[in-house]
Figure (tube, rainbow, N blue to C red):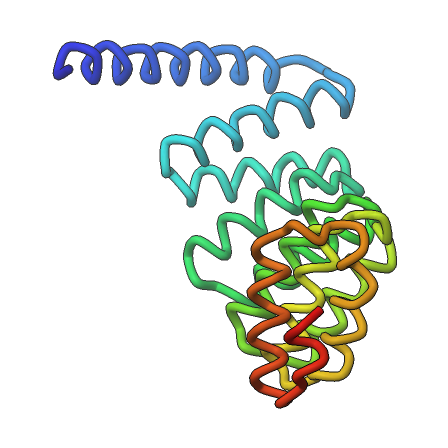
Length: 194
């Protein structure tokens, strides 16, 4: 096991030095913006994977310099800022990513998670509603919305969402347990029996 770790560390260092020397060649030549963007973005991913968040942030920022509408680089910054508990910066970066790629389900789901972590119930509800509005056929997102409504004490809204999805996924254990929980909270025997 220890040999594998040493081999993996050696591989990472080799890949790191190869990328560095390649980047030096790139920086020494006139290159197009797309090539520079890809170079910085791949370095950012590598640094992020090995936990070097400051270097990853620097490379994401450099990538954005060459492509200001690069949603994936903004999302990378969001992930780094979240890992560092820099939630204001994380929110700004995530909103930029969503601005440039508004129908990316992962970005929208991350928005729900961010506002959940921040305990911002108003924005949490709006983010969950936006996710369902953009992906109305996704039952998992409907369940998330129903759960958000329950957690924010919007019980009638939660009941409405659950009643709409039950015919499609009646055997779902999470939906069943949510219905029971909601029925007990609302003292709704009819919901409990369905």
